[in-house]
Image (tube, rainbow over all chains, first blue to last red; front, side, top):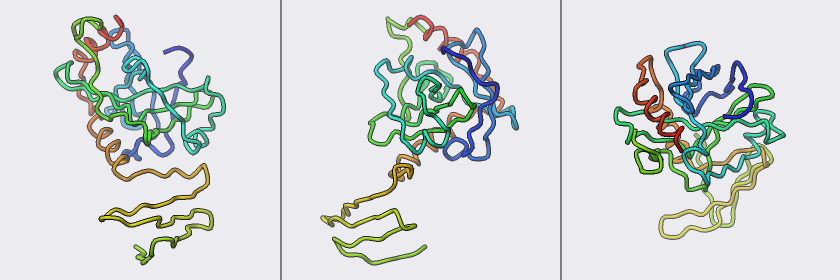
Length: 138
Length: 79
């Protein structure tokens, strides 16, 4: 993921349904890259695996709702980091990505928000293309 | 919960600047018109439920899935 990542990312409203967890840090390791772990600062055993959704769906389009942009003070799209969460199951072939509810982080201030892309048609359980000939075997 | 009865063509106003009007009722479906300031998010409840479900499923609770994540990462790096 290009550009700098803030040391701490604050989701003031939490992720949808997970309002108790607000402060996160992005843990990036060489083995997992480009997948990162969004780790909860206050409860370090809690985390979400995240990845750039454009790696999952090349044509991914995100229309930022004005309310969400306002919530994180995002004025310049160049300052945005976009992630989607992954549901990691035992079989790599059955890992899914939530393209319906991406996370958008304002690099300038470390504020993040989960956006629900109403009307986009994206799935919250998008099968991660993996094991196909172009992606190689998992 | 506040319960109101409205007819098609009627509306309610929330907080002075959000207007929800009943456009039509046909075969058990109610068509609503929502006029709200741009900064007010309006979502279908089921979309929010879907994202909430997905989040709860995605939470890792100290259970490392390192092997799966590493092999997936490797596959994504090749793309």
